[in-house]
Image 1 (cartoon, rainbow, N blue to C red):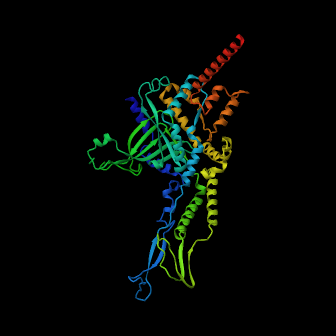
Image 2 (cartoon, rainbow, N blue to C red):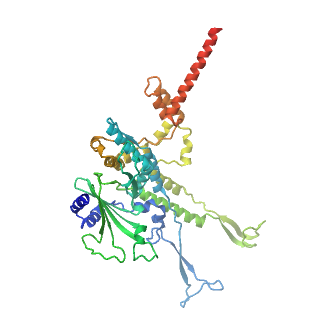
Image 3 (cartoon, rainbow, N blue to C red):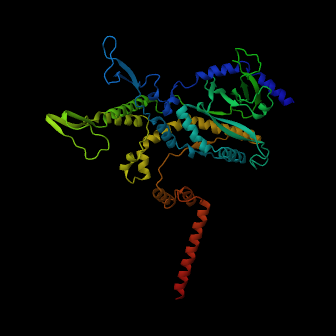
Length: 520
């Protein structure tokens, strides 16, 4: 009872009545100013398909109105009558934006992230193992790739961390009295969340808001006398997180009477929960502009160019058969065999009209634009035709070929993505200390970093030769370490045992052979 009173007193110190309005207004000011990223990323929403805004208007065709006899109809002024018809044009979208993001994420290689730390005391070792367990249980290596993709394409994404009860013995010796574990959920605009971070004057996040819709709980629907069974109503919710509390708001449901004020924008408090993480349980990733922003105009020109070529081909690609003078035969029909024409008169002629105009200018512009897009975004061209002339290049050679892509990926890791990833690790460390409070002192000083190896095209023979060289001679690597890094082994311990077994058998065979020679 005393604990609940304390939580209510602490919550009362927060500006609850005005908090939704403040977070919504201030958080919206931090939102990305590049407002068209999501439409540009989705090829089906490209401007080339936007008929309403005349990005690529329909073709206007004026035709004569013909009568029953095939003659033009005349109006009261004895002038030919015309009708206007609008014919849709080719609209070909190119998914270069999503291709740029896919390759950028692949070269970031975030699924291979590795934690780095040097635990000394037992408390630090336990803390480190708890952090690794939390990440492994939440499949963070897979989530990282989704987060990177959404950050580059949607410009906003966050990892929401929350706790749930756990059965006894879940943590083992790491946290014998641990009663809950941490779970991770990815939230982003495309997933239906409006993300609203609020910072102080020094850039420190003090609140984080999320506006979203959710289906009401089944237990609530059963106990609701106003539910008529025709539909499952969705609630509009607003969660606000701070370093001490999680406050949940919602808009009034149909038939529910509340007092709405201009201060809270109609939001009512649903629950106030105090947490013990010591940090806002959210990791926010943000990017001011997508990686294709500087070449967006070139991509739009490529789509227009390809669509124009499609229109030209529709009208001129098929040959036209023209007859001049007096031709003694009907027009050739499709499928007729042994066709022939009888031409009479000196000026009679028949021929196919073909399109002889060169397309070199179109091809040059297309290739130039594609080069601008890929070079401007540091994206490698990895189609089969692009790689065909490289031959059997080694792994090191490919590293040099893809150096520009590696630099772009490293810029992302060294920038916002890397900073947010470090914040995420620090948050998980704080959560681990909240689960096992005896580790709280260690969590204040113990630091866990991370490293992400560069994306490489593996060359097994080259890797094995390098490991053999490093583990012998100058002994830069131990045999065990070399075996662990070898692409040909899965279990270093088992491989070491097999190697020792082989060496023992070989030594026994040599000894037996030597003994036989001596006896002779």
